[in-house]
Length: 276
Image (cartoon, rainbow, N blue to C red; front, top):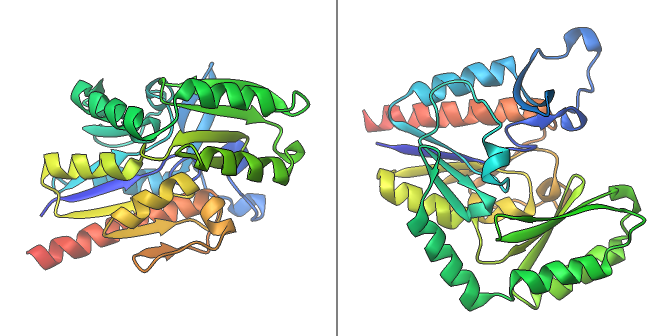
């Protein structure tokens, strides 16, 4: 039996300082391991316990660990996970499939063909974002891998009505809007993590898929997996979103990441015992 473990990264498996959610007294806070450095500064963390559990999980030859993220390849490649290097990684919300760190050209061509057929072009969406964003709260506007667009904003200043209006405009053109931390993403609806996960499962012969994620862009991934987990924070938790195959954790912050890795390990071990 091969078990595929596809996990979202930011605010699911790894956490910035702002997202750690360390609400306990300082003397009992968990020890942290830095797993990402950006511009010579520590950026993302796991608990040391989560890191040890992940290293143990990836050492199991029956488990295929697949980091699954909206990050670009460059952003993903800053992360240094403990344990065996992941043979596959899903970047750009499913638009890039990395095999031993190298983009799979056939997969990218398939994605490009589908987006051209089903969605408004990226340039139209990008120009609309620039036209309607308020300079009072807009900090940056970026394109990612020529696949989708996102804004970096002062979140507290973004009106809810503006976000609702953008969501409606995008949906009419085959796009999805997601607010994650200080970023507002506009992503083509067919650009999904679940499609890329299914492709990796096909290539590896995985018989069971496990997944975790915290945002609207992870919902399709969780629904496509045989079992999924979402932390007690993020877009999905705020909407009280769940599904029969998804466990909604009460834990929030970096300790939710630890609980998710533990759940992956326990489920993989259970499946291994069933297969024995």
